[in-house]
Image (cartoon, rainbow over all chains, first blue to last red; front, side, top):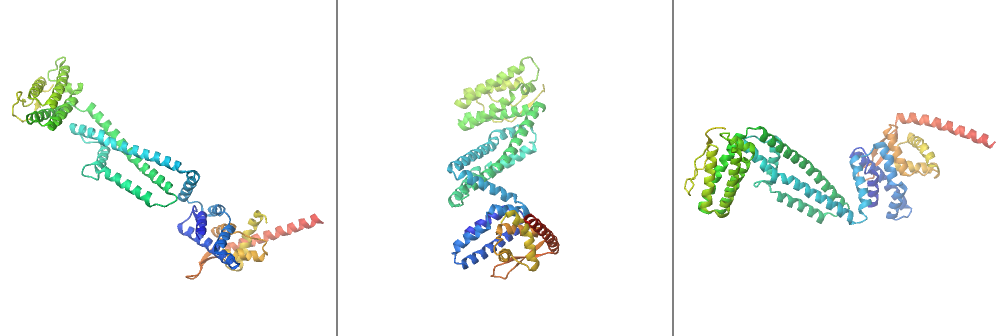
Length: 354
Length: 109
């Protein structure tokens, strides 16, 4: 009887119209085949032979399908599935190589897409967010939405990304283990292509959010008043120096590393001509270059402090910092130069503007 | 028999049979075979698309019948539009037959 159902599948598979209509056509044809089998069986044929002969009498399924399609049209989805199955039968029956190669390429594509989505969240978005926060500006809406979505998947308190990956791998494993479908390779490819389409949509969103965030950040950097930003950096450097001094006193290597990282990061942000010029109080010729040289010196000095945590190096750094503050008229609480105990490292203010 | 010739006559024969009584597909094939002493052996592959075309065209209408536990069959009955078409086609067919007869008689004579 499977032979009959297969035949009916072949005839009705891509027919247009409603499900009920296709079911009625199936029932009608099945009834006719049943009558023919009964008649042939009455003449002495076995049921199996009678079924085979009855189907043979019906003619080729594609001929009947074509005729019925001229009445009811063609079902697009079923047609596409039919074409996919036909393609699979033509190309994949020749061996496992096609299937293996196609799945491999698709898998690489998906891995590449996931990495491309993941990378901005790790390498670009934190910088963009930090930049906007430092300027006291709001993130572009799309970038903020992308960050929020990313935090849901990648954030520490959200579902970890690896849990999703494990879930996908487990689902795939169950499918490979349990599925006995003869269209297994096709289903695998179809799922992969669907996943790839979804990832492409996500990738486009993330890419657009990244470009928008970078463009807005660049625009802000060029057009915003550099002075508030520079003051924030100075304040951060001031705090970092306080932390670094504490780390030297307690010989805490991790704290020293952390503080030095903040200090050099703040200096790095101040070293552009535009930022440095915004700090210049007197407008003396060559003052910008002098300040930049001092910042470079402080970067080197802080590196030594981080590596050796010696009080002597810390004093040298403090001395340069105090000199730097005097040079720009930055009214900060003076940092004790000889291993003093004051931990007050709050940011100060420019006493006079440039 | 020539398949194109059969196709041309199929709808006329189906409408003629259904004009007498409602029938289902298998019954139509069997009745034609009996009436023509096996000269016309329609395959279901030719009959059902034609039946559905005529149904879609409003010449016949189908109705499912059959009790629970028995085989359900789709009976076709002719409609008024189908009777009108049958009349036209019968006339045309008769004219064609008369013309063919005349040609053959004179051709042989």
